[in-house]
Image (cartoon, rainbow, N blue to C red; front, side, top):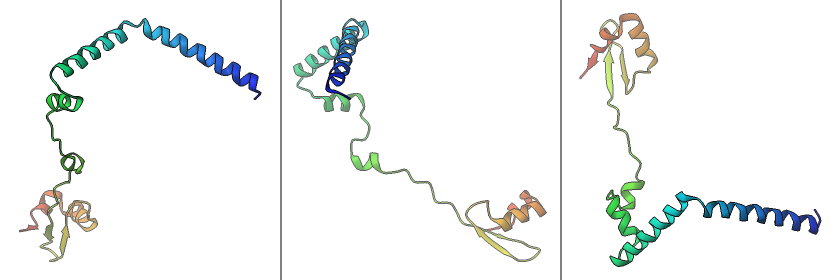
Length: 119
């Protein structure tokens, strides 16, 4: 791209940005936000408060980084031991996706197999 073409492209982009800026200056919503920000800054100065103080007032949640960054952990699953009274076979599992347990439930029924849990 020639220098002249770059210049014209930059000039065109500048004109578009200026038009967008003019449109924003006439936006009533933006004017209200600017007014709100100015009033808030004035209040903060008059009460000697900063942005962190305002956030702490409005959102008094935990402020320590350890509490907020620690991932929540699931409760550990309980190990269940099933004993088949017909065969004496034991199955130890923490979930219900065990292949042998599924086979038993299919063969004997889920309600019956749940009575085989050893304590």
